[in-house]
Image (tube, rainbow, N blue to C red; front, side, top):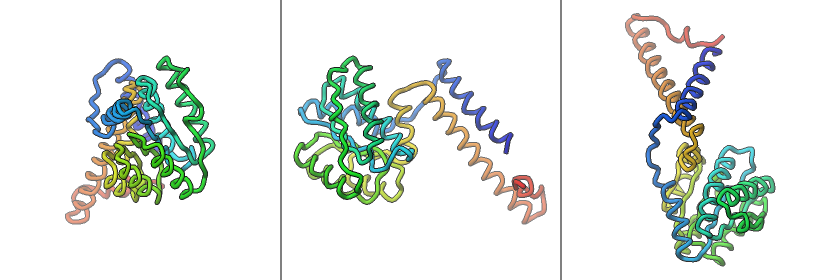
Length: 253
């Protein structure tokens, strides 16, 4: 186990260093992420706001953290294009984190004057009361783009259907397996699972993030290869007696 941890850590560090030295790393195009700038541009042209929903869970959920990270990149675009941004949240800690992410993004883009703390505002902790509040914002303000990035439960279809009814372009991102079908059905683009977690690397193109994605992919390939090899060896040993009992080698005592 110790050597496995060393190998995994070494693989990640190698790829991060490789990216920082300027090594070329290919990230496959993800339509949902490419459409984010299109959604911001559409909102700018129509003179209507962007609605960003970072899920309904707290900052102890990795999907919420990923949603706040993506929000920072979206805020940079809204600052650049001078587009209105509306971020209703369901948790007070998420509100604080989202405000800081937006503040930093507007400052980096040289538009700190455009930042307003009220663009990130708290609604309620209750699941369906929050969904009703967001739906009310959609119906009243009619945003040109709705982005759902975070942890969602039963409210996902309620939000996506309302956004669809007002004609907004919708982009969703979540790792909640039960909610992915609803987002795929009702939204224009959906980031599924790891696509969502890789969004920050894709949007920022920071070497440490891009290298981390490459390193994780290499580790996954190695694990898949090990599983296939172990399965074949076990079948061969049990059926013909050739080779050795690999389960003895892999079992940790």
